[in-house]
Image (cartoon, rainbow, N blue to C red):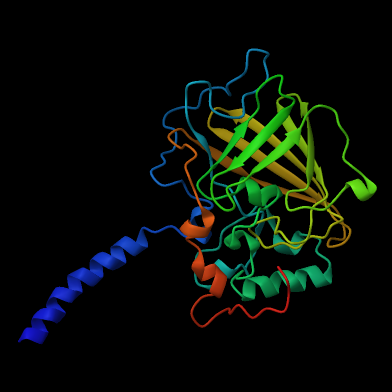
Length: 293
């Protein structure tokens, strides 16, 4: 009788545990979803806010809060690890068969997904460039203050770092002065209301997108940001990497304004919600890859 009572009591307790665990975000799920407690803007969208000099404000108006959520995948890929695990296929702006990958790069892409992207540096708190940076979990914040000649992108999740885009007319460093890094060297300019970001000098230790697409140090990346209205940020990116692709190609996604989001303290090493991406899923990947991420 006593044993039956213990079993009966354990069932609702187990149910509560499962319910709580179902609410814990993972790196795979939350990059495209809102930050904890975030809400989307309601009602018809207002025009994009502007600074007194007429420049589009890419962030929150003074005295208000909010940041950008959503976005992520660049290509529809039937072999995406989430699709392979039975989740609905998530579309990108292009299909992976139309991405001009070199043979070795396509093979590496498939290998990464076959291992449930368990080698992704992002889940080990490493910085991510380009579209992966804009798709960081829990939202990103853009800051462009007139007169600063810089735009800053603050990343909430992941490595909890930031990118600097220089608008002061400086060129990219060249030769031995261009040292490849996780985020590369970015310069920018305005074309009307679109911010154009030109980046070179990326190392091969980072992954540039959630699609696990390979790149080499030859990558030249051009990103275009357009705040079409208060609630919408159009993100477009063009890759030119003769080391991994046979031709330049373009994709992108849309990010949404989350008016209640704010940056918060986030220590990736302590709050990592993607441990399954480090060790693979049950019966799937293991951390035994001979390929350095």
